[in-house]
Length: 493
Image (cartoon, rainbow, N blue to C red; front, side):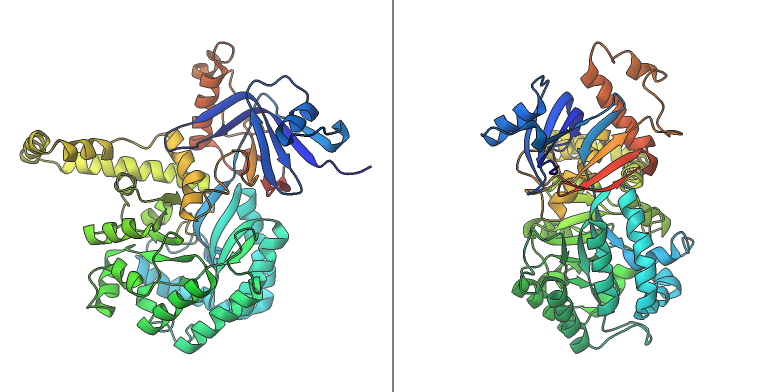
């Protein structure tokens, strides 16, 4: 018997097509072409058979034998896959350690020493399989990984991700100055090995957006890269049409160090920009201590920000102002930043982003004196646009916005928002089946949650909006029942 060509999911379908919009199809249907891995159609309140729906969506008759129906239970919903815009695969080796240290000390004590061990390919082969499986189990369908400086270990990481079926960017880390002697490379080695890695991973198709795993240009950060290295990496990014990832304005000491390395540049951002590393396919992690010049250059160049709140708290780096980025039209997604962050979960990142946002609001409120408040009121009378911006900044991130950052926002940061991030026809089917009623679920059932229960019959859409909020703030990997990437099931409970 031949395998079905199409999948049709029936039940609750949730996504966030725009920031702050939670789109709920309480009794919807969604079709997937398993050959292309793309969504062929979505419908609300459909009673037609799955085969009839597929026939309508593709414009020709389809036999029911070619269609498999996936019926979601009353406690399950379909949503886009979670996107981790910043994580370090080798740092799973010291997950949960060193969080009493500031960034630069943490790098010296843990990061460089552990990453250097990946010159041992046997370690890479055994370790990466476990690490990637854990990331997938947490519902991450697409991730931007940092590897190490070692080409062979990075290629093992790529093969491991491909075998797991996950979508990913993978970067060979580059660091040719201000690095320990046991974990460094010359400028020439860094650039040559990066190009070797690109060819090994992608051959002649390095810029092919349809590839499941693709290379990404990865200068570690400004303090460990010479001007020659940064410029060379910028040229490689342009030559092969590749995305770029690095760190920006994470910690005050790091910012001061970076500026001391390039004293002629106007800002930290300008260092990357002058090297040709800024553009709409650039991902900058953290962005905690951004001055106005940094913000403006990031905005002008279309650079995306990976907000990594767990790491920012854990290493005492500070609190990134997500509302500021949003108000300036800067794309924002979420990152786990393992091992600066101790949880390889974008669910945790959503909750940490909420906590960071609220902590920033409370800190600013408590720091504002009566005199400052009167000045704000005076400014509101003379500069109403500024007053409106302050009001927007003070709005807490809600569940719909957090889900957006974890999905569609992440896709924007990765330069893949036309392909991923929402459940719209034509997009790749990277998605999760969430089950809120698994054994020992951290999410209470709908009946005992009175606010949900009272809406179950009268307004199922409102009930599901509340359950989606519970998912954001309570769920964990136990609730990720199925993980699909490109229409293929890569994990199930």
